Amino acid sequence: MPRTALILGSNGRFGRHMATALSRHGWTLRRFDRAMDTLPKAARGADLIVNGWNMPYAQWAEEIPRQTRQIIDAATATGAAVLIPGNIYVYGEDLPETLTPDTPHQSTHHLGKIRRKMEQAYRDAGVKTIILRAGDYLDTEASGNWFDLIIAAKIAKGKFSYPGPLDRTHVWAYLPDVAEAGAQIAERLDSLPVFSDILFDGFTLTGAEMAEAITRATGQPVSPKQMSWLPFYIAQPFWKEAKHLREMRYLWNRAHRLDGTALARAAPGFTPTPLDDALRQATKPLLQ
Image (cartoon, rainbow, N blue to C red):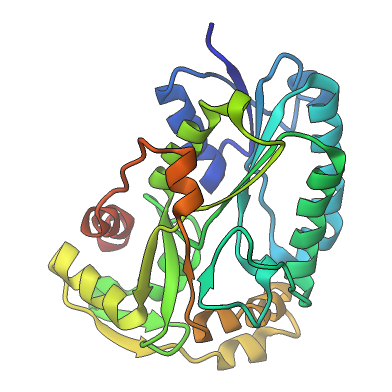
């Protein structure tokens, strides 16, 4: 009998791709409609709640604790597991170069503390939870992320604007791959521990390597240049997001990578998309 997944934020980046992957694996999907549904009712009979809800950084402090309580209550009442897209904000500014599930969560900045509290709430609740932790996303459409909004926005003109030094490694995750890994992990719900912190290693590239890969994958030569952060400082008084984007600047300055050992155990059949193919899809909307 097919299992049922409730998708929160099915039109967003993570939710959209998870819906596609779970459907491909035979799951029955239930897409949450904010205008019509209530979470307790929508979660009835669901085996898995996919938390694809997303909101601007400026709303995190208010919205994430509220949504976390709602999802935990729904999962507790129904016995459903919860799958959450995790990030690396929780490690803080002194993060080591290689991140593992055992790396301490020591963030002291605003966004990192919110995410730490959110994850701890799931641990404390005893709800079966999967954190699928990844770096910055590469999407198949322009969805307002760092890659399509800033870095590769002008590659059609040969321009590549990078937020940090071009020689520092940064972690990227191709969203269809993240979702496929998530769907394969969800197939093993019954054998998973109560709380799973699974790192999606994805692609680890310097800015220069990313520019070279885009040129190779698309045939469009790009000239990499380090981005100026001055507009973010100027915009801060009237654009709330600017403060939080600046807060996360360290992730472009500090080299880092994710250890995918736990992912290999949790989804042994997962095969990642080759880098050039992923970049070809991620840049297609930007070259049209």
